[in-house]
Picture (tube, rainbow, N blue to C red):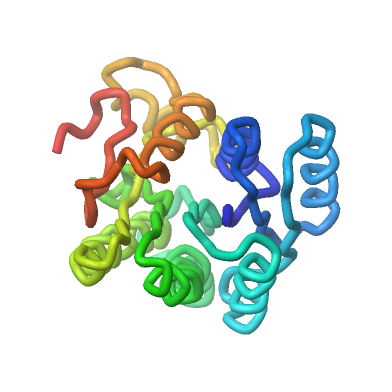
Length: 241
């Protein structure tokens, strides 16, 4: 299952996985974009299952997982890419509580909901891979991005906990912490916000969508068998811990 599958990292990873033979359930709120992605993947012979849903809607997420199990017999991996930035470019005391709560609801609560939905099936299988897209801002904190940075820091904390909780069950839970990736979400940020983030990357460039897909694909594979509770760096040298 890939959440946030209709655009950006989720779309790229869906295509990467499908091209390598994976059956993929596509979760996103944008039904028309999901349909377009389904048709695109089908042209190359991919087998996908659109699952139009909001990651914070527990009943809808559980129903989508049930559909996966009925169609393919199980759930081997979850790649959670769903996320929003909220209002940026202002200091913390200027952030509206409603906006802060909305970002936390999608980025943290949504991650908890989708993880909680797939893990029971993974426990029955004795195998599973869970990967969440976090952010360098969750490690270091980006000024002007209070809600987003806080939500990603909390997500990294959740990954640490769940990685330990399921370590003896054949299930790994990890995260990827990218710096700036040129996605539709990043394109909505103020230019000065993007310039600030890029200026702190020693490689002096954005991460590509393909680079994220390559890393996510490996972490989702059986080969990534002895790492759990970890946040993989993908920041061009900005973070080295």
